[in-house]
Image (cartoon, rainbow, N blue to C red; front, side, top):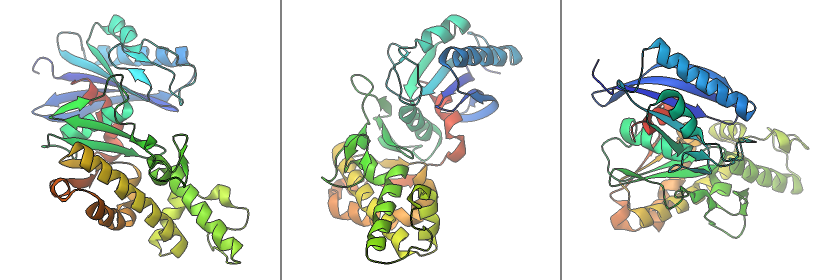
Length: 321
């Protein structure tokens, strides 16, 4: 085994964590082993992380000499330069946690921290749908909406790690609330936003005296993006309308990114990978209408390629920074 081929990845989520061991050879990444556990109280979780990292190092005889680095992926806000997690909304009690210092003192291996959108961008850029490009944007289209930006082959994280917070962009003065703002990019296109749009359309039908077969009166709390997608795929008009609205504003937001950043590739994950057939037709029409033709013609929108493995690849990709 050549030196510096080994990587450790730490993926810290709101409900679960994972510590992965990967091997990087000939520009290919192989996930060799993984330990999963629930995210609990901050000190307990950090203890489990340290225990799992030590277990991986011992099991595979990894050390500073034969390990390139350790990567940590976590929701923001955080400071990648200082290696500090700064009170993410999905991690209660994680207030100014010096996670990089803790791991480096344990392992003596160079350790790096990035927010999850940036980590996913690095993964798709190196090993997924953005491979071979120089300028790429990755969108985490799921519960929320964020972006990781690659410019000239390098991650761009901004002055204080807040580059890519595109979900905060207001696209209209009305519409679903996302990122604390009505009519935001996140509000119109995230999982919660699509469900909000569907609920508004269902209420309009009820007010007109019409039934919606897949949502009984008083059942709006059961409306999810997954349910709306299932009904839209079956051809239900209300559900299709909800996705058409989401696709309209997805296209508007992407046109802004195309005009501003002039990327070769925009990679979209999560909801887009499952619902591309519902979103792409209208989305592409809007991009063609709104974006500068010279920029639009050199940009392709792709769904994420790493799928369920992206969490492992993301944390391990941070180790390569």
